[in-house]
Length: 121
Image (cartoon, rainbow, N blue to C red; front, top):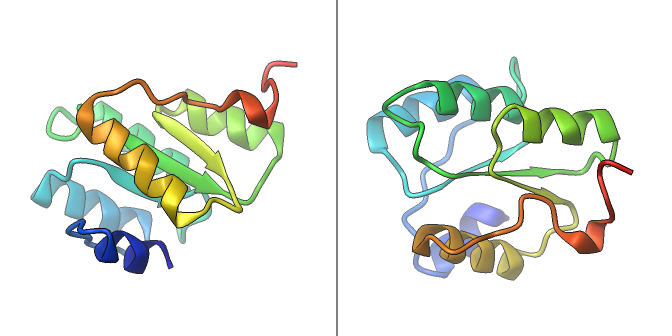
């Protein structure tokens, strides 16, 4: 759904079926933003974010992680692993487009929106 919506919005979108494929795409294509889900085959989206942040070729690429899990430990892990932005599903495609455009423009996008509540509470 997200890839179709972002393509329709004018983005050039490449997709992968797992974290390894996403990592390979990121190192090859050097995208403006990497969007991932928390739950991926063989490695989590948080682990993908961490791997991208540790690689000099991809460390400057902002990452946006989407998850259906509201478990505090998973959310803290995602932010701790280096995911620049974490959003909970349902996350509407127009909201994703807004956040991605802001990230590309270098605008400040909250890591964790206040309307989700405090993560450290």
